[in-house]
Length: 221
Image (cartoon, rainbow, N blue to C red; front, side):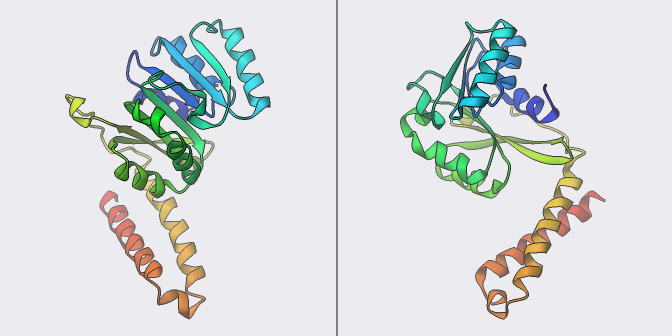
């Protein structure tokens, strides 16, 4: 039920926080938060009917119906202002995560913490955080099903963190960087088929990213 990706997300959720699990799917994250007494109130939301029905059943079977509120709706629109302090959005594309955050500014402004796990376009999520009054407090990696995921913990008030967590470099870091490098090299190979593409600023930025990744990988060897 709980894989290493969900465990990494749970590790970032502050004790006693009120949590929204957006895109809850089968409700496994919400159930685990209740089971471990991490959260006293959780909103498990999904816009799709079928997974939400599965979540309702799982939550009912777990006995946490009084703690977990199951709601159908789009993104953060299922929430009331100030209802939660921690928002989790996991298992979606980075672009969609940014859209969800942008669509509900009042809800977002009343939250203190974001735990975001994009399936792709992670750089868009980092850019969004930088531009929207949040700060990256920590990042972790987790591997599930042969895929390495980035989990981002962002906070609105970094000064409230008395002693930021200092993690040793993840043993997955080298593998993750190598996977990222392969993706960029494939893009570079495709762009090199077009003389016009090679002359663009985008190609120049791509090559800089490739060199940075190669340098970082070499440091870990």
